[in-house]
Length: 95
Picture 1 (tube, rainbow, N blue to C red):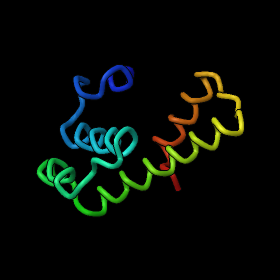
Picture 2: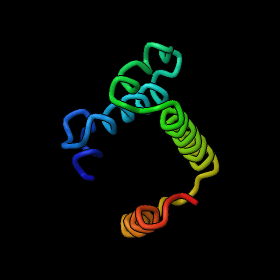
Picture 3: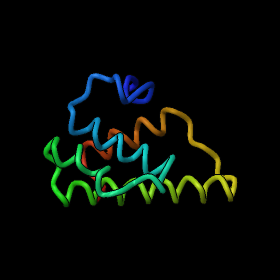
């Protein structure tokens, strides 16, 4: 996971995840650049419409949460809290 946080482009992850990270990067940093052509690498990597929609929705939610937290001055939890939350999500999912 640290490799992904350092640089998702070179991290040892499967291509499907790498292309999803590319979409998240584009949606976050240059949303005006996202077109139908942006989705072509995801489709070529085997992501279906539902998976692509999930990537877009999760990205949008996290971007919104981040902006709200910044605006309202939320405290950022310590790293151990993030690790605990990640473990819980990996075991139970988002539902």
